[in-house]
Picture (spheres, rainbow, N blue to C red):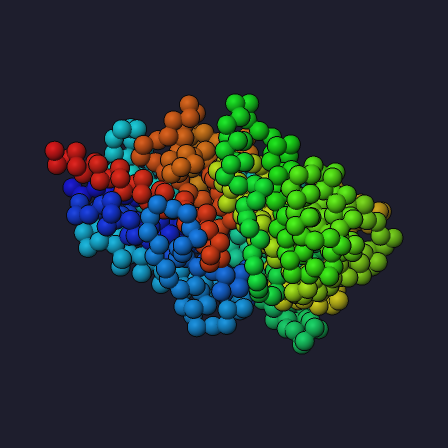
Length: 584
């Protein structure tokens, strides 16, 4: 029998792994034959999230030129670079286009086909369009992967989990809200991938409370407006009459910052500068461990500030008061308070200074006298954000974005750093396209979208849901429908996926935040004793080495590519040695 590898999950991560297997096989695995079994009920390449069978109204969240599934020389890895087209090159569209997800699904399907075609001729790929339910087997022996509707398991020498986003059972609060909704004939839609949610219960003209102001809300907004027949005439929204009224709030109370709408020009900031491999090595060497806020965040703040001011001083020197060389020397040597004083004296305009706290929580301390006054105030905030993020005169913002990518690439080595960082990163670096925010403004002016405020609180009482926020003291909104506009938390212990639950029960260990612990070097799943399983790997957002995405911007190092390469090489070496032992 040929060696067998089972990959559970045939979306972008599974496809990326196959691409790396094809790239590394000539060096590490020649002539031994291999069966690769892909297990996923959704189409190979696109998977669930990017499948072509979804609304054409839903867009990608990145410019087409910023999406690639192929490595380049900036990816630090042991395997060979195999370049290929970005989405916009493959589709022959304007690179600044925000392509719809159907087109991205077609691109991913093509990438999958190319990856399979690049495998050696004695490597065969089999797709099983069903779910994997369980993995069993001894640590040192073949694994059994049990499939839905199949009486016999797939036999696997290695198993790689590349599952992607997880469905999850309701937490305590969500469970109580769902029970209350059922008892009082209310509508409660829990966290979910919006394209899979049944929105038919949200009635035209009725108020709907929406908790969550990120990308899931943007999808919800689109499906309940244009998706119900409304349309835009310039900056004016023309309702169909079938829309509900969306009262949206969140912890921050504002939408994610707009995607930046201009291109980078000139010299890039030399990153990493204050948070690179040496700093990560020092943190990992601490026998007592580290605390993110105390030990990591100060270095990240310094790194992001360096990226910001490097750009400001080198491209917009007329807005600074001293030479860059003098500023850099003092900035590098100074502690936080000294750097703050330096910035105050060297950067005259407060608008040119980097204030991460204000970017993260812009409504902190803000109070409005009425609901309508807050609508005006938040529209002004969004309009200001759009102007700034589309003005190359504010290009230090783009430098901070590059700094965030650099930091993320380093943080992967530290494992699970808690949920705050991922929310902060998404708020600054992974916001909606500018046109979506302009649509949100039009919907606000039309009265279809209403803003609730920061730290939105929801209670279930007197047969309804009630929402309030300290941003507008004394204001309460009642509704018979509540939507949790966010993806489920990727926690292993609450995952609905039976395979992950079984792994958890079988000894796989999770972090305090509920993420699956894996070996940072190659993705092998760790047990409660910290031992890597020799035959089980995991990649994706439910692990403690999660990355910003399965695909990334070209020429930014691509942490997911680096992980895919390491896992592919480890798998090939294991299978090669196994085949050699079998021959001997």
